[in-house]
Length: 465
Image 1: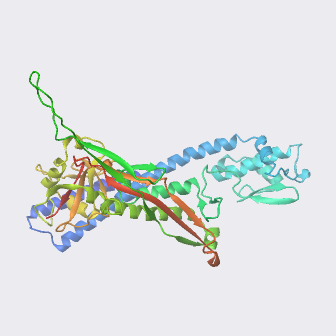
Image 2: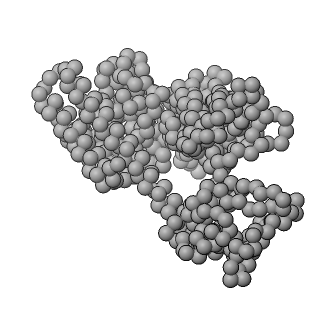
């Protein structure tokens, strides 16, 4: 796997090649690109996008690795701080039964059994996170207690009954284990990590949830947001004793409802749940999150607003109508930016949104000084820019430049408000498909989206004639 520096250098090299390629083609003066040239251009752009994706992934992995390292060090310290009193506390189960005695002849030197158990358990736990910290004392205690340091289970004896306790201690400080929910609905609550993975997958898909202002409510009743537009009104100078007049702003409201979306079911055989070695629950949470992310992103992008969310493309007003139905000019991007009021352009969250297919065309554009409007990020975490503005890729927008299509939106994206009700409802159905020995996993979310526009149109779009 390439390291971050190699990927950064490769991305910069490909970015330069993209600009050199477009410059060379412009110098030829041809009216259009041949099929062969277009194919080469597409391949170069695909290589750049693939490298950028790998760089983002590796950067995220490195950040996670550093966080995991800190977490391991903290867990290690917790383990090293374990005392026999901890074992004494777990020496009784919930019903009050004491732990059964081991063969006392196996304990030498008058060492207390609980101390030996503590040392053996400490060694077993260290093997999970820091094997290099294991000492001879740990090995001797484990041998005396009758376990192996590398065993997958640590057993604690109960009176007249030996039980194996898997994962008795929370080594990772988080759990993907599913636990039943009281009641006859068949619903199940999910571990915190499972929910976190699902929400991350949902957030990562599509783009709208990344740039919109997401509001969580506890109920599904309509959420009303009053607006006032006073942009056309100004004060005036008065003469002495002159009367004032009434000049009211325009009041209105935007309403967000709660439309229900579902991931539909994922059926998993019991054997796969029991035997899988690839952290299946993480994969299920990712799949459920992507499904919910897909449907929400589509609705928040192009939803009609009739008994569903009103997408940002639907809600945006036209800022620029291009001269050509099959091309976008650099000046038209500048015109689109300046169709937004300056007070909005200076606010946080202002940027572009378009399909990845449109980006390939935008990478060819230059300003009046011959400088490319597209700039690649140069360091880890630095986003690519268009005309010094950030952009978001949204695959639910128009993929090609064609007659009558909306190709680009620009403006204060955080003015698009997403309303979600009480997070996500997750279920594991254990009885419905029992005759097939399967469990079903599914998720629901209630949400709506709309652009908060008081009349000054914070987001506008580019359309082809």
